[in-house]
Length: 402
Image 1: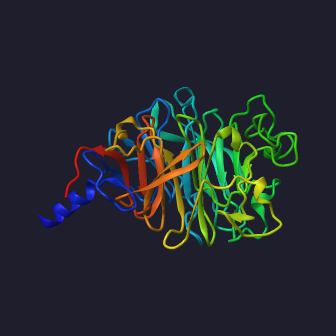
Image 2: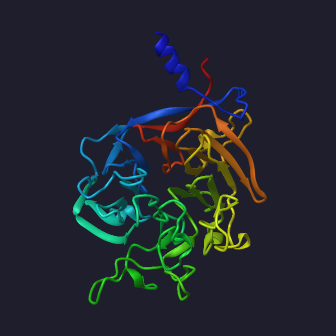
Image 3: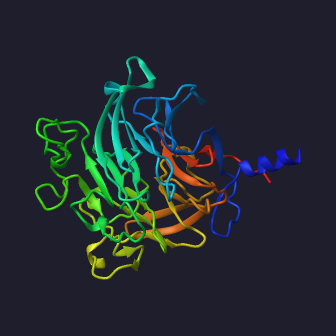
């Protein structure tokens, strides 16, 4: 009975300030929606009620009506490398295009056996949304990596319907080759492409020889089209943009960029201002000048928030909360705040970002150990994933237990 009571007390928990004072009559709770093997991403296709869960070792599983389906949507364990120094490899994310209901397509990002990051397109089986047709695989992009670390791996379709790709600097620590500032490389960048071969500016670097088709195309308004630099680059100067998101209400871009030895950072700005933005790595880590002579501060976009290591060590980027069910939390609004956390401490925070800069930061009472990712479904509900297995959904609660 005591164990059951303690579990109930731990399950219904609230959002508070750093001093963790009581909130009032309405609280937040975590509702467990499933348990998986090292879940690192969750996504919901447009027009679908299914939830797709990405497991780091190489499977995509499906949640239908709250139940995990017996067969995976996709099993890539033979193709995926999920072990290596830093633990940053594996099947990393999945994305569905805006026309999913017509096309049936999905895109996955993963680390292959040669340490390269691959973006591959799949179609689901005819008449069966629960299973991918492995024979439909079409490689979109392959990014060679110099080490097993800092691969990034988040892919998401933005409000403009293009595919955005987060690519890390490839390591090792400190980015000694300054890959993130090198616009001739795709490392340390946020990329923006059309994974279809539409009649727009051709993706020159993706051609693999005479007579081979172009695997993707580049929007004409990408910042380096017709200028020195890879056409795919939308923003640069990132170390490891493990997770990023777009605010569904404003289109603003939020990036949780993993730091090196000193600071973790949150970058946040309107998507249009992110076009061609330089976030400073590896000249700057947070607001600390790491290297001189790389890039002056006034030519970079500084983070809206940088927090030091100890005990935190690895930021996990989240979402701006737009779930109306989470409004009016005892007068302490969470809707409109950016929620994020730290992998090492499991601590979770809600940050208000105003036109004048970051506002008050609040902490949650609960923690998620080994926090790997946040997710948002079509209704705007927020999910939190632990690499240890469970996935939770953030829900309102009328009262707090204990």
